[in-house]
Image (cartoon, rainbow, N blue to C red):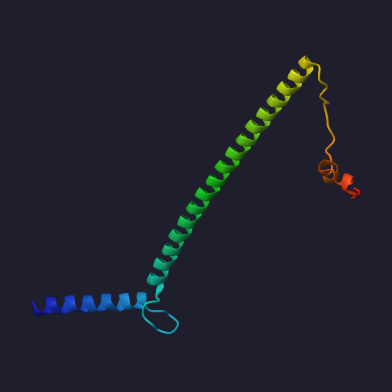
Length: 122
């Protein structure tokens, strides 16, 4: 029995020595920075990177959905404006009023009537 206990004690001591070697930094002998700890930290950093990448992909999907929504709204608004413009032109043509197909934009002095106040347009 004493021999068995001595053998178990030697085995436990050997395991503790191996575990201390795995936990120790090979360069300076400090505990807590061995290959096992570095492997765990590496796995943790991979998981962290994977989580950040997943969050980034969710944000990209949200942005793509927002862009698609805004494009659809812009198209819908453009179609509505074109429809309204067609209706106005049709109403004007049936009433005999003349609506030019293309109007050149006025500059701000023409629009505000500044020339009447003595300011000349640039």
